[in-house]
Image (cartoon, rainbow, N blue to C red):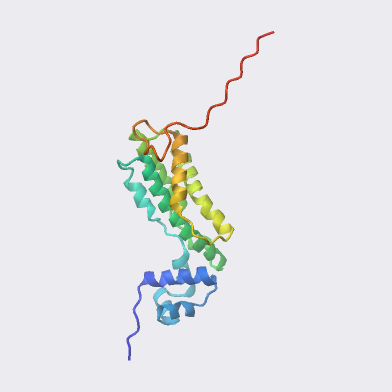
Amino acid sequence: MARPRRVSDEEILHEVRLAVLELGPQVSMDVVAERLGVTAPALFRRFGSRTDLLTAALKPEERPPFIDDLDRGPDDRPTEAQLCELFTRIGAYLAATLPCMSALRESGINFELATAFKEPPPLRAVRALAAWLVRARAAGRLIFADPDRLATAMLGAVQAPVFFRHLAKQTDPWDPAVHARELAQIFLEGVGVIPGRAAKPDCIPEKSSVRPPAKRPKEPLR
């Protein structure tokens, strides 16, 4: 008699996510078990219940993986290159996480209870990015006034296409790196880069192509 196949927790959670995104949050765990080559009771023995299994698979991580990247930086590379990398990783994470969070809401599970973190991941992300920006400013790389507002604006801009694609149910391939490069250029042109610390010339133009409006001549006093 063949021994039952052993699968890791991550394999199970990965397959649950795929099944939910493909077939909806009401998908039978028998489907997941069949794909894994195990039985549904074996899944429940591992995680306790269907609710526990769905929650573990679909809820966002309390500490998103890109937080470690923020905590380590900035480094000595051009600021634009670092922002591109950070925005790409954050965008890819959101693209994978947002559909799962939506499915969790639709599953009937208490979303607020399932995602009751000590510090909500979005707030943690803002705090970590703001700290990264402060360190970049202290190193003489950036000029800006309010790190919290700038971090919020950056994260909102990264999330926007992910959110709108999800609303529009777009499934065509999307490369977060392309969006990240454009955002990095926009933000660096807006907040200011210290001379000598800018990105490569072919990434960010040294001079803006937009000319300031001409000053109107003053009318003589009457």
